[in-house]
View 1 (cartoon, rainbow, N blue to C red):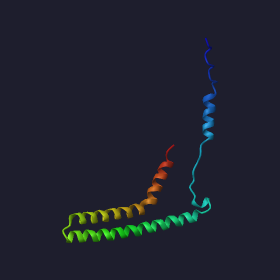
View 2: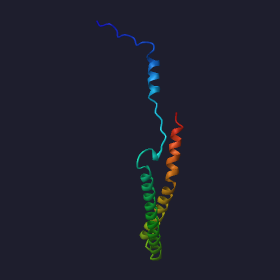
View 3: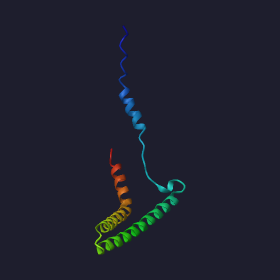
View 4: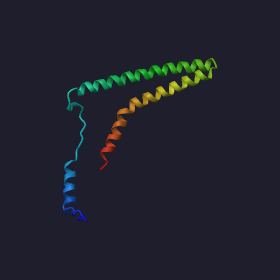
Length: 113
C-alpha cells in the first residue's frame, strides 16, 4: 500500500496571493504612445465622415422612395423607403454616439475590482 501524499506547506496560500498580486496589470489608453497614433485618429475621423455621408445618402433615397410609394399607392415601396429612413437615422445616431458609448463602457469596466 502506498503512503498518503504529503500535505502542502502552510505558507502556500500566502505565496500564491503574493504571486497573483505581482501579476496585476494596468491600462492607460494613449493613442499617441505608439507610432501612427495620429494617423489612426485621422483614419477614424475619415471613416466616420464617410459613414455619415452614406447615412445621409440612404436617408435621402429612402425618403424619395417613401414619397413615391405613398404617392403611387405602392405599399411595398412606401414600407421599404420608410425602413431606409429609419435605419439611416439610427446609423447616424450610432455614429455620433459611438465615442460616448465606447467611453461609457470603458469607464464602467475600470470601476470593476
